[in-house]
Length: 309
Image 1 (cartoon, one colour):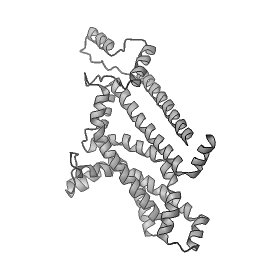
Image 2 (cartoon, one colour):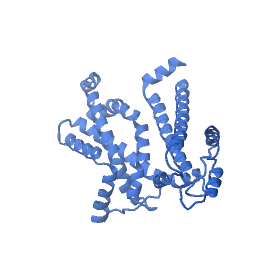
Image 3 (cartoon, one colour):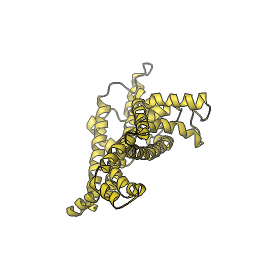
Image 4 (cartoon, one colour):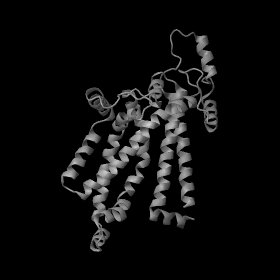
């Protein structure tokens, strides 16, 4: 098992290096100029290029970029002069994360429950209801769902606030808007895998032994049906975190998504690269945790890891 974990960690590090390199290359070939102000004199432009190291050869810039990255230095923002990129991320990401983790817990929890209920009531009312929710969740993007929820529950009914503040209740609408699509995906997958498990011989054996439905669900169905869902938790977590950019705009959340969209428009290369690397680290870490968790949960994976030692 230790060999399996070390192997996954090494893959994660290589992936991060590739992403960091590709991000640097894309910034080099991307059209535009962060110092494109027509009122700026050529002398001031040259000084700014020198200050940010853009006057150096590309290879030297890459070496400085990777060295700083290894030291945890993501550079200094061009738009937000004098502010380090990592400090901006440190201040803004908690607001994005507070919505993201709530949306993930909501989506996975209800998605698993809905999927199991739908499978146990195959081709009945509850099954059709879950299918309808899944279709709506997949079909309606967060850029539409967000304003719709804000209008219905915030403006029309007045039940929930439409802007995020320090209160917990203000997190409900953006978390719902962000998590509905993932809930639909998880419920569909859980429904499909549960139906497959219900057709297995060991389920019929459990019924023949006189086990109740709840015992069969707890002991056999959940453990086996949840495995495919566990494998996609990493990408799901990443998609929710990065997908919060649109939701943050709708609900006026001063999170990392706000900085990301602004810095792209302003061609703030250090901010673009820093946020991209930060998101990449989150994605890689989430997938690494899922890989390790999958290896712990799945007996076949543990057996394979044991043979490799």
